[in-house]
Image (tube, rainbow, N blue to C red):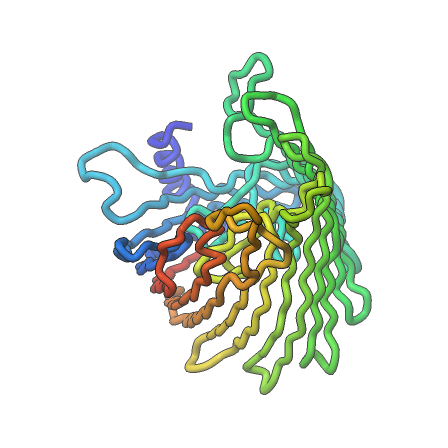
Length: 416
């Protein structure tokens, strides 16, 4: 749909149907000021930090009856000053567009562009921290009752609608995605299992290569809900687009203590398998791929580990969270390291050298406060202490040892 036509359609819906009770309208406006001194990418000593403001404005239309539900969400995402004034060049787009039908009391079918949020979002996520967010064009069959939930999803992507014969899918995205998800409450244990098949095309080819990821997520509450244990395990098999076989895995294990009903302290270990570059007999890719999962909430607010590290990743972190001064806070300390041997890409000699496994550490501070009338503020400050091994891995040997990131976001939400 033409962007002007889409904007006109949204305005038409707002004006025409805002008085009808069955149509719910909600929205969000969130400008964010950021100071980037190594955010997502380390800076060299001769590079200066960047300060910028960017924002998301989103409006949602939801119409619901006993048998059907329709949702349309549109958004404008931009950095302040990225476009010249008096120039017709906007960034308005559709975020969600789906319809859901009630087949019976327990069975629903949902089709269209939609968010996929499952378990702790390690594999499928909406990535809400990033202003664009993440949605997927999917067909979803959902079954749920008081005891269990079961979802089946499938999507098949094309670059354009007027293709009359098979052509390579050139976008940096999966060609096809299908999954099964099951969740059940077992006493004090909240258990779920998932299997995801992702098909990808080799560059300049229509041949499909499959990556299958499956596993489970467990959450066990003990001691009258003051202590909880968390465990996640995923195994990954299949074939890369270069023909290499995949045999990778990841697991996460943690414990959280709640006290005074306001604060919680947690210890978590995340392990993502990697390929040992000193193992000359290995013929498989053992590096775990994070698929379309969340990065910001798991691997540090600096987002320096969104890539799939060849040697894997070991992330040990402590987290203190809770309520204070009418707001919510979170303090996290990460220690990142390599679980496998990676050859030094810089110091290359007759005898290959292995990188030191210490990659660096990070401190993340976050404070979130909500006011009346839908207003809120979210502040975060982070710093990362990079070790030489990390600098070499990301080809930033001359980067600063100390990197930092700060942001202040205003949030306004409304609904009728």
